[in-house]
Length: 127
Image (cartoon, rainbow, N blue to C red; front, side, top):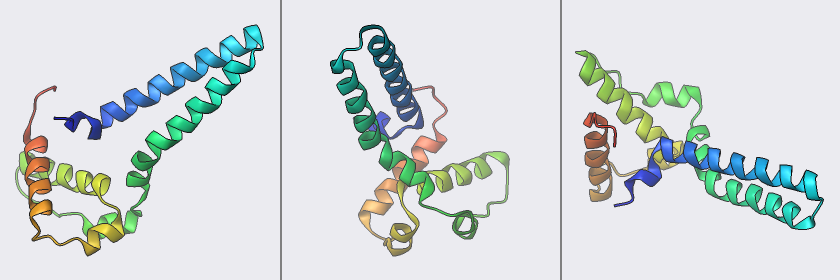
C-alpha cells in the first residue's frame, strides 16, 4: 500500500519540501528576528537528517568496486538489459554490501522482494 515511500521521487520530493521550509523559516527569521524561527530551522534540519539519512546510506553503502563485482552482466535485447540494470540498482538501494553478502537468496523474504522489484522494473506506468 505504501510502496511509494521507497521511490526516488518521494525522497526527492521530501528534499524539496525541507528546502522550501528552511528557506521560508530563514526568510522569516531575517525579517522578524524571533527565536521561534530558529527553533523551526533546527527542527527542520534535524527531521531532514532523520528521514533522509537511510536514503543516502543506501546509495553510499556500496563502493564502485563492490558494485562492479556484484553487477549482473546481462546480454541480450535492450529490455532484458534494462531489467538487469534496474534490478541491480534496486539491490544497491535496498541492501548494504555486507547485508547483501550475508543474505539468504533462497529465503521467502528475498524471493518476494525480488518478485516485487522485478514487477516494478517491468512496469512502464507513470504511477
